[in-house]
Image (cartoon, rainbow, N blue to C red; front, side, top):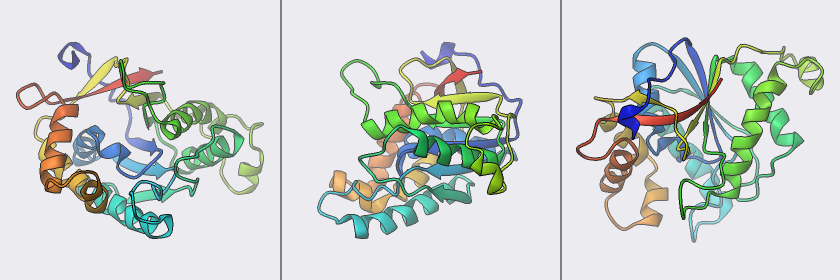
Length: 238
């Protein structure tokens, strides 16, 4: 299906990618990020949580710092060095004013023309229910883009030094069940595999196979398959 989708708009130079957890952006989206940064575009990451509830048998106080370090290494592999964590509790992220305020602050800080966010919809497709954290962060991000440009919403952000930003041209949703555009990532899937494999502790807890084998399977599956054209699909708003 992605072979029939038009290319993502390229009228931007700065992007902010937002997700609920460390590793969310590494399930294929990072191949697009690698292509963008190699072309000289600036990409920053914001993670709502540190993923501290994501490793069975590992207490949050241990898992949080570990997953933060893995995410920073993973982001660096695709050319992203500005990675921020908002500190919301993993597994119980609430879609509401606190989250919107935090996201609006980061949008004003980064001043992107493109905002990338993980799937906010109820499912990833038939029979695949999306997590509460993903839904909350995705929906709050869509709202926060408007909040970032409104001087009368979250007026305290201006007092903190974050002036309004209305320069977001497009919000693009990764892993959406309703994609509208795609990015050609030919030549960038190996980098994306390396990036996902940096989540060593997380992947090891999920599957006994070598992490590179797992990463390869996931990245190929989410970017067109072993033999298909290398594409990352997105749903575009704006």
